[in-house]
Length: 154
Image (cartoon, rainbow, N blue to C red; front, side, top):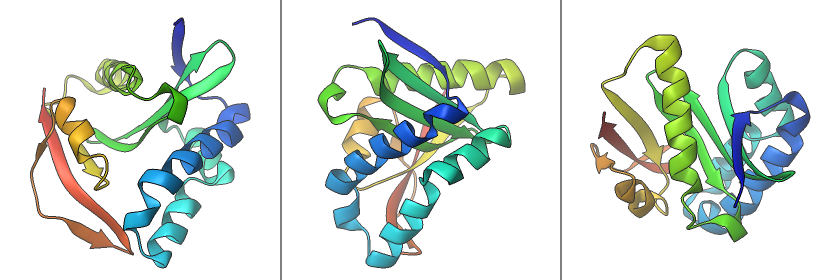
């Protein structure tokens, strides 16, 4: 596996949205209300991803050859806004590599953070635990989007 991690480009927004939607439909949407699904889909629409990218958001993609196989978006804090791995590529350490690359990029611009946070979908809690995160709050429902706050000390 010759994985390359690099900043997402405008021309990658459609592929990124497609990857996120395919994974979310199976693993995340079943825990959301219809309102939550619509809210999430609006957040991961290609045009919305491109708007954030053009505004300077830190969005990295993982490529195997020409195929986008993973994506991460890191917000100020730092906080993981999105972390998805394509279905056939799950379980290969891609999420961990994306997270490490995003943290390195973030640290070079903002200094070394004390912690990394995420609002994990119910499905993703065990995955984030494997990545060193711990639950640091109660399950929440915001606009029909259910999540559990988690943090990883750095």
